Image (cartoon, rainbow over all chains, first blue to last red):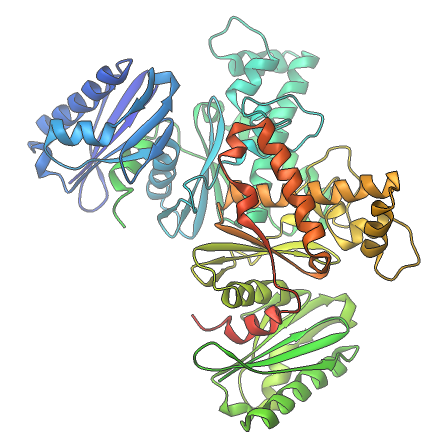
Length: 298
Length: 298
């Protein structure tokens, strides 16, 4: 049995995966804020899954954690997990001390990539395109995470695609993330709705021209991300996940429309069959927790 | 002993590689034009290397060919090799019939990627950025070619990076290839010089403002290609090859300048150490021929 935990900004998912790769247990806790509370949340999640499975921490074949921010998976060090209120944390070391066993720490998008590959039964090469506050991808090759030379493979949110675009938080101009992410939408569409994207889609459905323009830029930005992933890595599939994926088919249809339009203008692009490569992660999948359980497997 | 052949638009290089991976023989022939002449050129290259090594075609551990165009390496089929005057050719089949042994056919940029990795003694992950008439990359992971799902990995020349750019031959607008390639320069810099890039650099050195602007766009486009490769695949190194690489350090310095400028504006980009990852292929290296000899090795 393997144990995986996904520490999110507000909620923490934890799962137990049996030896056949099936989901055996699944729980959800509120995430504490700040370093100490985050460690406590992880310890509590291990304890709850332990009760449900009857296993002590040392009884699991592996324990893995997915967490936002800059993660050094070799050392278990986490930095810049802003939403969790932690600047620097030796999460791997802290948890090893508390639990008495080694714990693998992974960036949550990378963990979700491995989890999505597994739970969707994919093969070949996949990019998991996470559309949350930011935009980033996790790349999986034959079931294994592709980290790259310095662990930054898939950081495509900071590829600029418009010299006249706005300045990105990273200091560059016109990055994919400035249009194809939750923060990109929130910057352009001012609303009191805690979910600006929901408000945007509602206004666009009502015919608001500004909302339609922002929504079109969002779809074009996502389609651009797909194009970058296919033309560079040539992935078999691009799985869209993250907060924006809750928009479901409304989002996917918009992206397909853009890709179809591009294919009309470019026989080369048409030959790549981009729309067929893109799909959504199934709603409510604990992909990051499952991936955290599996990421050290191979 | 392995035999590799690089069939170029005007010249064909052939090499014999010994079991230790060293360059044993190297010859150069003129390339014939059209399907029949291209096959004859390859047969002649095998015969010449055969004389020099004393080996019949069947005496080589492998024979590989790098050739421009769309190459299906599984079937040995070549298409759209416009500069060679061939629209479709069963090159693998034709040569197997003539030589009595199997021949591996590979796209020349992909072959050069493998050759560059080998002759530069690299390890980890490398992208070979070919700046010729077009722009394309070959990606090598731990010495092996990364083809992707459909053999299009590295086709980054057709990633658009400017919504206001010119229409590319592929039908899209503002592709990297429209600014960072020989054809991109030739379109912008009208000259009688058979090497427009040489003329461009001379005029820029003389202070011509238009030449300087085109040269700056060339460097920014190459730097953009490097950024795409690092942010997507996170390659350890990007090796610049192809016709434009003959500009040598003048080109490399321009690219480094752009990357340094970007790093000033973006701490994120600065953290990627892009300038340190970029280098030029050594002048006069028969990379594609060496790669053609080695590409099927693993």
